[in-house]
Image (cartoon, rainbow, N blue to C red; front, side):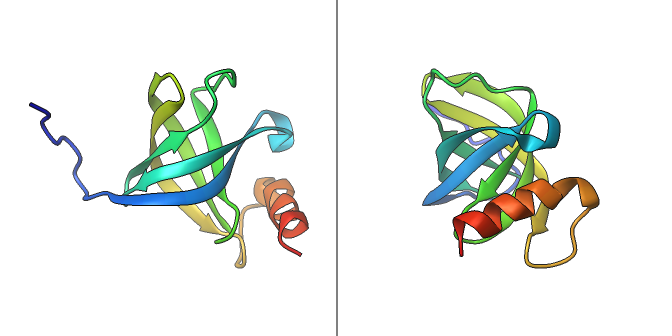
Length: 108
């Protein structure tokens, strides 16, 4: 029997996204957000891609960047907490400029 430990309800999704990390977020891997809640997400990302402890998840169509912390990883699935989210259409911290530029390039 599975016990639900999440504080917030989750919504099943199929959102195209990109995981970005390293200096200026230059390293990346495409992924799909399989479920999303106020505090986190479940990502589907190929197991061949290593994930650091902290990275950014860019929702490609929505223009939302979520700061993520890896909680677990099993094969192609990963669970993350996402305490901070930024709307790339608004004002963002200067260190997110490369992510906003990437998002704009992918969504002309």
